Length: 59
Image (tube, rainbow, N blue to C red):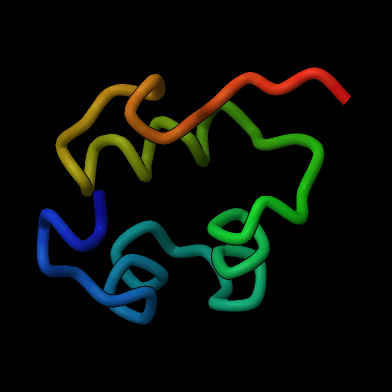
């Protein structure tokens, strides 16, 4: 979604007000949870739905 919106990780980090380190972990899938408020903010900035960002996988 970032590529479609031509937005860098730094720009998204500033727009969502989340640290670059935490956003990078989200992007690479190295987190096990995300707050709904964070997901909502990311979706608002990227003009997308949560399903556009999340993928279910069995561990």
